[in-house]
Amino acid sequence: MWYLRCPRCGWVGEEGKYHPFCPKCGSALKLEGRLEGPEKPVLGEGNTPLISKGGVFFKLEYLNPSGSFKDRGTAVSLWLAKRLRYSTAVEDSSGNTALSVATYGAALGIRVRLHMPATAAPGKIGIAKALGAEVVAEGSRADAAARARSEASESFYVAHLTSPVFTEGMKAVGHELCELRGYDVFVPASSGTLLIGVWEGLKECGGDARLIAVQAAEAASLKGRVRVLAEVGGPRSSLADALVVKSPPRIDEMADAVKSSGGGVVVVGDDALRPAIKEVLRMGFIVEPSSAAVWAAYKALKESGDVGDAVLILTGSGLKCRLWELA
Image (cartoon, rainbow, N blue to C red; front, side, top):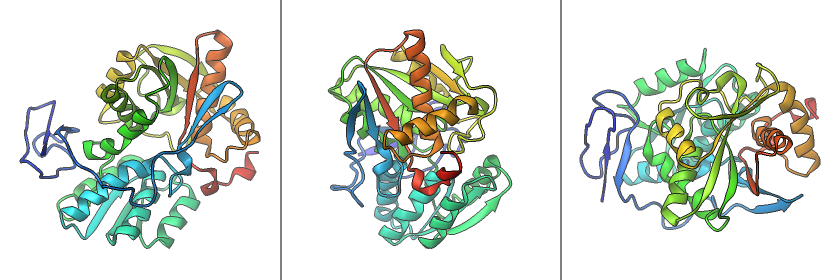
C-alpha cells in the first residue's frame, strides 16, 4: 500500500488517497510505500530505443505515444485517476504535458481540461483540442498553474509539478539506463520530473551515473544550487519553449539529485540552441528545440573536456513544432 507525505510540514495522508499537493502547506509531496501502476502499458509508452551515434547514446523519449517523455508519468497518473473513479482531469502545461494528458484522457475515457499559457506552441494546442480536451488560454505559465490548482477539488489534478505519482512513471527511464554504469546522463530539466525520476530509478536498480541537468537560460533554476559546468548561447532562450518553469516546486529534490550524482548544470541560450537544432535534425532525430539543448550542452562539455561516456535524453517530438522555420 502507499500514502503521501509532505517533507516540508510533515503532513501525512491516508493510505491510498490521492492529493496533488500538500493540503496543509501547498508543497510538493513524496510517495511512501509502493504504488502498483498499470500491469501493461496503456498506449505502448516506455522502453524507448537507445541509439548509439558517433560514440554517444541517444535515448529516444520523443517516440512515446504523444511525442514526449511525459507519457510515462501521465499513464500512471490517469490510470490511478480511473482506478479512483474520477471522470474528469485537469492540468496546467506549456505544451507537452497538456498534449500527453489529452492523449491518455481520450484513451481512458476521462474528460480533460487544460490550462495553457499564451506562449504554448499552436501545434500542441491544436492537437490537444483534436483529442477532445478543453483548452483554456492563460496569460502566463504561473497563471495556468494557479487556475488548475484552483480546480483540484473538482477533478483529478495531474499536477506534474508537485505530484509524486507523476514521478513514479519517470523512474522507468532510470531502470532502462541501469546497465550503462558510469555514464554522464544529460537530462533537460524544467519542472524536474524527469531529472528526479531518472535519479530515483537509478537508485532503485543500483545504477551509477552523473546527472547533467540542461536548462534554458531564462529558466535556470538550478544556478546557485549546484555546480555550473557551462553556460553557452547567451541570456535568451525563447526557442526552448518546453523549458520555461522558473521556480519549480521540487527544486530541492532536483538539486539533491544532481549533487548526489556528482553532476552539475549546463545553461543553454538561443545562440547555442539554434545550431544544435540543425545538427540534431541532420542526425535524423526529429525533435523539438528544447530537446536539442542536450546536444548543445554535450558539445560545450566535450570542448572543455568535462564529459565521459554519455547518454543524451531526447524528450519531445519536433512533429508538433514548425521546425522548417529553424532548419
